[in-house]
Image (cartoon, rainbow, N blue to C red; front, side):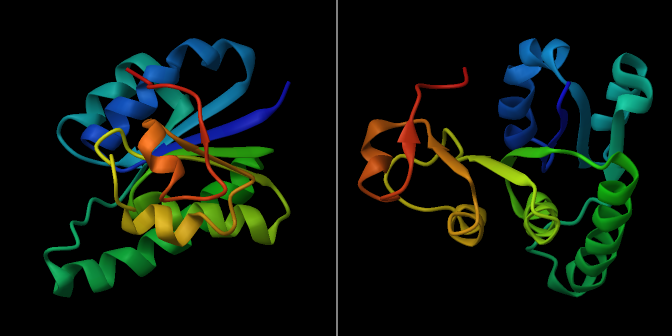
Length: 156
């Protein structure tokens, strides 16, 4: 059974990621997201199958410039501990370091661009597009934006 890390930022990215919950039973999964008052409640359902990174919004650049490097280190530690075969992410910034760590260790990366993106690239999409083994968009129009993407429908 493949070991899969499902990782995303909190909020809408996590909501999209959790739409894939039905496939969790087909893999040895682990969920990683940012720790907030909302996401901490997921521990009740997923127990040791969920881990948390530090919540940090990019619009607070001073604190973000401290939290982001800390999350890179924490991502590396979680990656080594879990030793996944595949990373699946819906973005955003929280997931980007894990994708690059995965590629360093020659693991697969699957990136699913946000449903909110209809005709423009997200920052995390721009950063992960070149290294992703599979890049999925949720709107056919996005095939013109990302030339190497595939369209498989919507997560919702």
